[in-house]
Length: 187
Image 1 (cartoon, rainbow, N blue to C red):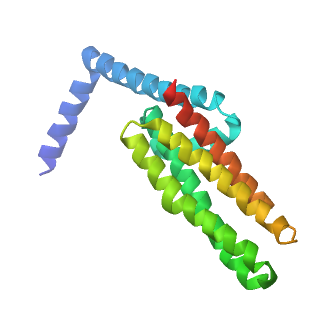
Image 2: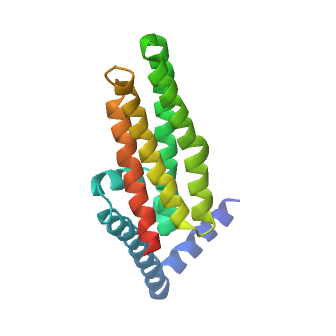
């Protein structure tokens, strides 16, 4: 058994040390690096066309799949970010209902609009992107921002100050960045 391993190691050393093998490995490494740089460049160029390139980079680079997808794939990653933000906000609404029952009517409205985001806007945007109808995905992302604005406004309508301003603004920002990514697909 030991001689088999020794022979294999000798074979490996001989094959790797040949100039042709070394050139092939260097070529492979170069192609891999160029491909990775091209993917990063796609992300950077895409993010330059959004209202907040730093937020865009944060969203896209947080997902390892962003390194290996096209523009539609980047848009889908963004739609997932809107979904995640919506789910996070729905949890916040549940917690606020328990700790601030006086905000019930406004929080009920917020729960309704954020359910619309995660149950309607996000799935319809995903479907639209997957079927090549980016215009409908853009509408879904625009609606997600409008829903967040509606939540924020509901507190004033009920005579309260919103405890959700930061979250609502975060949703508006994420949805507008993703909307801009989707819009690039339409150009």
